[in-house]
Length: 158
Image (cartoon, rainbow, N blue to C red; front, side):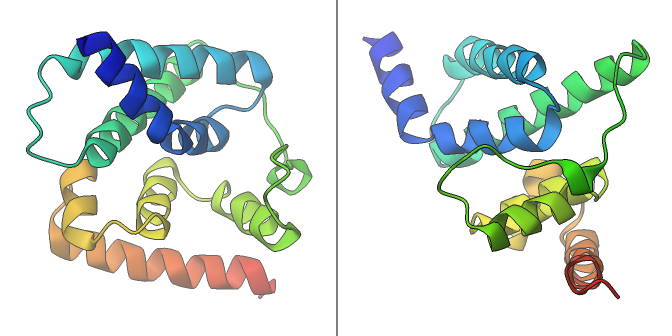
């Protein structure tokens, strides 16, 4: 019963997981590992999900924390390969060239900035973003403004 409920909710919100994987994993093997880790950690925490927040918000927070932890572990192991974000293209056919360019520019941001802008683009308000990221609302507002300016510069090449 509880397993079916969990699987149904994850299926409805799997786009959240795929966004995190595409933003924080560089190759297919890492994407598979990160996907499995997000599912595992989500399932482990599901019994404690009380419904105080939307499931999508809860899953986003877990996906983000697992992704950042995954990156941290990779960096400590010195197994991260350097990639040129300009050469990176998303394999997803539904992304237009403009969206693909936007995602490549977003990958150039810091880990936290990447998370903030993706949450913003997914429609979360600044209060929700600040709660998920662990920043004050004012700090989130300032960071979001600066991120938008930085992306505008990246997108226009200025």
